[in-house]
Length: 365
Image 1 (cartoon, rainbow, N blue to C red):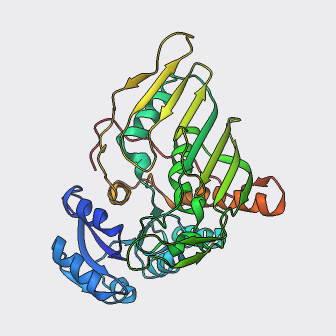
Image 2 (image 1 turned 135 degrees about the vertical axis):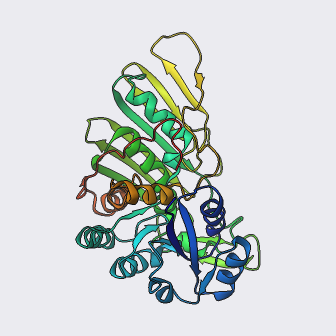
Image 3 (image 1 turned 90 degrees about the horizontal axis):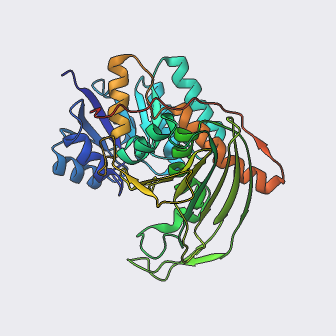
């Protein structure tokens, strides 16, 4: 197999699972180089996973003519600058979520990729896993009839109790919507189709947060972004969705995602995972929810699946499923909730995207 050569920029917490999977799970990928602003992290990653090249800067990796796809695992403020630099260097690029912090930067990434004939895409790729792909098949087969409504809930009390460096989650570009919203909204667009308009309400409940673990324990964080965001979603299909993302809730009995159709209801698994359970309830008043066996593979933690799909898309001449247009649409939705809350308006989306092509049952990348 003619393997697609990958370079990774950013060797922080999330990089380990990417490296594990891209060096061991996806035969089409060959990880050839890593880079990090902290060279010791890149050196450690290269040693652990047998990667031949270590660069001390993103610029040096981007100048490597061997690299086909750059995987951008930097922190969100650096997503757009690194993606733009990669595209300008003639590389295809795949970025961790979100595509960028600002809507305008996401638009610039999409436009530059189109102009240069390059592929751009980004996380999350969890919607390509066995759990949500099984849900996609059930909807496509009409098992719940016409989808008429959806709910999505992501509730916890934030990252300061466990994360070693939680400050970012409460600064510009952070907050529960931009941090966790991509998982839920990407899953919803995959299942329900694109969005036409949104409205939102948000608040900062706790103006400061105290780090509770690690070397920074006791440090106070000033909260700069909304930590509870509620939104109403108007899908292009006519369906209506409700979403809450919150770092202000100590506990809740809420579903992750449920889809309600004219003939039944579907309980969708945690969109931050690749597995199930998938539960289906028909229109009959009697009977319990039925657990549906997964029809698709990649039910384990398969982060990097979107990169492998992009590599196959390059070879097959098709769009990547986790493409930049989808990531930009999700970013537009998320920023739309904040715009709506701040300005007291219904925000009508500037972006459009189609539903990504479904995975085939048994498809291996």
